[in-house]
Image (tube, rainbow, N blue to C red; front, side):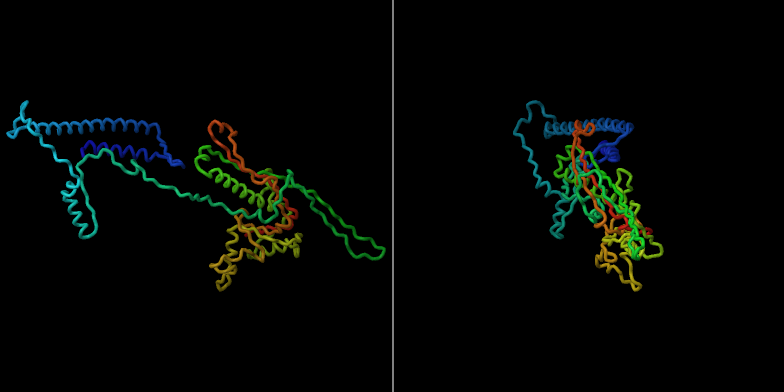
Length: 416
């Protein structure tokens, strides 16, 4: 290999490194180069220099080939006494050169002979051969022919929390823009035993109209028509993920929506729900006291039977890991899933609820989720200039309202 060819290879590797350091790969595998103005100038200068060196190298190779051809011609034109043949001399029968025989050339190679002997004795063959040729372009996977790699059909979705809250209560369709119902807000009993001729006790009853407005939850994403057309099932995949985002937001709003439009007023936002602080109690005791308030036995006015407890995973963990003094797990051994229940009630573990807070309530009897529309999926190119750029908007939305008929049928446990 000539010294100039070594210089060319070195400079081409340097130019390759410059491109590699400024390469960006898109999701579809296409590459682009982020080069500054100075780097672009450097690329052009290096390319001009390489073209010049390549031309010089090729000229040198051509000159060497001409010199070899000339020497060969001189040899064929010489007589046995080393004279140059004159015109008309040496026109006898020409000898044809022996054709090249690859098998013979390989069998005569001492390195290959040694490798074959090693194979006969050890069963292993390994040899190195140095070819006396100049290498113009190295064929390799990174700059030559990349190997084909087939992508698996599996799509690993982004981890999302499970949908659990909406299933705790009835889900009812509605055609109204708001849910109205009457709640008895004053109940004073005047019933008592009375003597003959005495004044009877008077009762006081007041009803108040409650309105829970229907609110919208929506999400959209832009996508090209080519993306949908070239990847089978892509539209369904995107729409399913958008629907999942809607339902996750729904779970969150049911619990902690702040009631400021367009937010839903979640259960924990209602002013009438009861509260139970952890205080000096253990977590299980505080949850039981909240159940007692919902039942309205000792303190509180719930007079309802709780049917579920919603709790954050970080707050459920210390309860699940409770052990007796001799180390036995109260909620079952680690080899078992253990009961997802506390004081006989199912426990719903979800990060949708605020950490350090649990919610005890009679969900099925005293709350209801109304659906003005289910999740509606739409696709359109009418947004902005999307039509002329073959872009689409995929949109998912729903309209819902949450009714909490008896706020005192719920109790939050704080300070967990």
